[in-house]
Image (tube, rainbow, N blue to C red; front, side):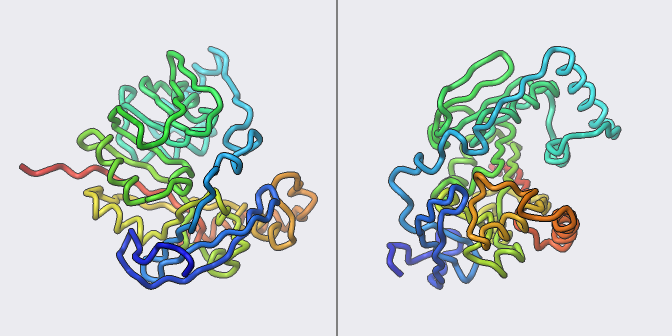
Length: 309
């Protein structure tokens, strides 16, 4: 192989395969190579670009329009979350389900890694959470308010500790996953929890379509795990993996099909590329794949194990 990787940093195997992938979101078609560990099934981007920022332009999806809520709507959102916490569902947003397995209180200290424009932090503040910090090295302007803050920082520059650290499709954008977990333990308070939502190579779409897989997303995705490799990382660094939920979406099908047509995501109108019947079938299929645990992304919930003296 044409790189320095000889041992998998997750499982220490030296058995690799390689696959070439192109940048397809914006259609530059720049070519990159991934190494796949044949033991733990993790994917590693070889020789990432020196300037990754060029692949995160201002129209990248996580930097989209920020939607603020007025005081009345904010109050209604808080009441909706209160009702949800008591088992009453009033059109709950999807992120309520992400929070459900976690042990949170309004005073929990929460960090969102790769927070983009901070929309999720804002929504959590409306729910009543009081200590919210976001970190994103690609955000254009840092932000600080009474409700939440956003810092233009790399993950390894964080100097606070938290009760919950979240990675909502940001973990795969970070190199050196073992070092990420090592630092993660340092910034977690005792009993602290971790939520990582990430693409996984368990997905049937990856197994069938390989280089056209929508969530391969070269070169932005530097590392893509398998459920097996996430389990290994947790055990290695004293984090208990207490819940795994597949939450893949219909985009795994229409996005992959779009790339197989040779079209980029940006600039394509999905409703013009696929019929209503096709799009409906994609949604049904995604639900089925999640139940079968062959979807292409999952939520991993870790808890910091108590240390023994």
